[in-house]
Amino acid sequence: MAKPNFIELPGCEPIPIVFEDRSVLAIDKPRGWMLVPDSWRKTNWNLQTAIDSSIRADDFWARSRNLRYLRHVHRLDADTSGVMLFAKSEGAMRAMGEMFESRRMEKTYLAVVEGVPREKEWICELPLGPDPKHFGKVRVDLTEEGKEAETHFRVLLSNERFTLIEASPLTGRTHQIRVHLAESGSPIMCDELYGRVEKGYRLGLRAVRLAYKDTFTRRPVNILAPTELFLKEFGFKLTPELAKEKWAAQQHRPTKTG
Image: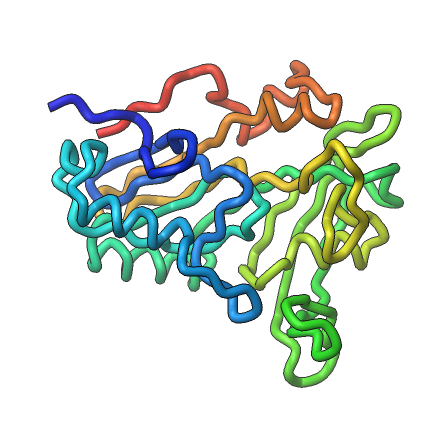
């Protein structure tokens, strides 16, 4: 039975599957989907719930794969798009979760900021914690309660208004990239929590790459999300220089699934 290369859920556009093997399935998560309800923003309808319901309903995308289990291994903010990894079994969930916790998962994001940052490359290691004055926000927390957070940033390209930045978080704190860029003086474009909103734009943050060594086969895995539309939204193109980046290495090759 042929497997569709997308997840079809009620009331939304099909969600592309960008990678799949026996253990995991990765999607290109659209903006606007909450993964699970936040403590400050409750909802009965979120991506994980929708996927669970679709599997129980034996919808074709799931039936063609004989799927009975699909759980998110990590999180993306509701307004962040890009590579989102799911485990197909409890065993895979444990293995992949441990990989994230032990920092053996290489994560790459593209962020768009206004203006030009002071540095071409820098590392932000400011600890983070919940903001007690603003429910749902995160702040720099220099007390003993602050959690370790580390993000590596590198300027890739600038145009008349925006700068494209590669962000590589070593830790996985809530809103980590968003807070670290804001604290560096370059908040992400259209970030309603840590920057400013401008009509006609959406949050300038996209998860573009996950890379790791498969626990079972020991082979390297490189999962990519398309970047062309995201770049175009902010007036950038995939230049020959950008095309050499790891997250762009296979942009024009279809990803095999199965």
